[in-house]
Length: 433
Image (tube, rainbow, N blue to C red):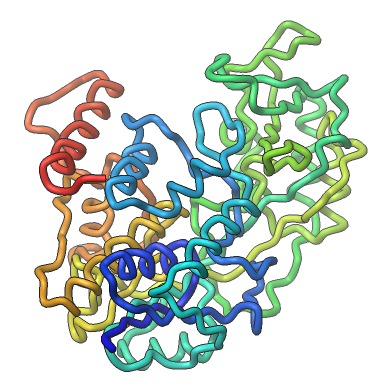
């Protein structure tokens, strides 16, 4: 019986497994949970969202929205789950993370072509394999990959934001609104005046940080998940022009724009849990309680989960991977997900789609699909496989990785729409939903 092995049941691994299975090919899907969990994982379900519950913007003329539109053309299970489990988030697509994981777990376990093997894998198996073990790959397998690739890993640290109980927020102070009144009032906003902000900022930069006992040093913090306390130390106004920016908001108590605003976003469908937007942190738990309770409206906040920080690891993809997501030296081994250096939930899932699609093509003797670099998925893969990239860092969906249009369009919104149309026209001609 011909089959393909997939290592890891995260977003990338699940997408890869279902792409393969959809072609009538059997899959051995290896997942170490529930036997063992990484420091960041909390549940035994597949495709667990360990950081934010937001999948970013939905507008097709945004980079994140275009990525999702392209994924739909491949019948992405993550997009099916997101549509089924969404929660209100203004112009963003956010999901109930437990229902999201449950949806995908059921899709995997009920597929007759997928055999789930609960096992801690210590080495890459023989045959055609998709490695999608994520940025927290178990140490033994990570060492095997390192030896197999004859290449050093790159490591960075990723941080998750706290989650608080919605009914513990003082709504006499906080107010609901989205910036510039776009969409519904999906965010709870905690406004600060200048004095409150300066008191909070002083406490934040002086707070005690949790030691990173379990991780290697030295390390690099990835900009996209910069801990709030690290960002705050860059200057008194650094977070006020970042995650605490007050633009587009007006405090109904004063009628004026606040000096700074902390936003809370629904974490689950019921809205009983709230994510502190942009508050990824590595502060000690008691310090998080003390410092974040200084935020107006959160004096009595109940923390359902404190922020945590964990190690991420990715391979040197520009030197190792081809654009079909296979190793240049061993084309039967494919890599997918954040271990390749794509950054973000949907970016990881999209890379899993391509890796799974091409692993099946290799087994069936078909030509691989290599998306043009004027598609968002193709542009991301082109970036991580570009040998000219020397200072390789994780990359999420953005229009900057795509080649420019032949004609110049000065208006940014119109230019982004044209870039999206160019991509989706290619999909219309070549790959259908």
